[in-house]
Length: 190
Image (cartoon, rainbow, N blue to C red):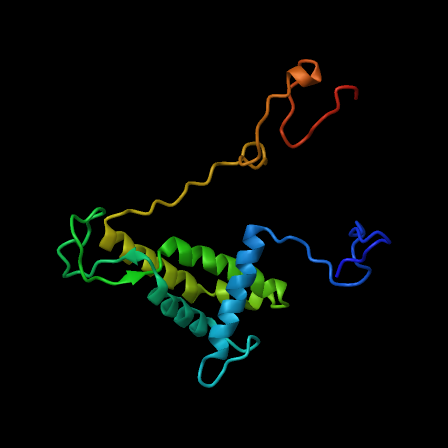
């Protein structure tokens, strides 16, 4: 409750006690929501599975469970629209989670696991079986939907620098001497 001054105007000072909440980024919010959803999934298993005792099999089963909430049409081999990116009509093939969504989810859960005290070396979300499962999902969806997923090519490093850093020509800023984007020099330094 806001405190009031003598003439009943609200005080501009925050209350003395109470938790301070920082605004989470969209990514952090989604990561927390995903972690809580996974924890609830484990809790609903019979018998319930502790967050400290799950393994990669639980993760794969969780990904399969999520398919029922998917929005991506994945055609069966027998479907007339199998392999067509834009089918001309409706069919009875199931909706599933898109591969990219599952891949991003695993990335967030992998990070959340470590933030909640899990060991990076023992992270079930980083298990090879998860990568194999995601690759199989990607390949099957690619064939069924007629959309090829292309792996992004990594750019080569130039002189040991990360090519993803923004390259800015600082020639004019540094008296005609070009510098890399990683080392900013003050115009007054010698």
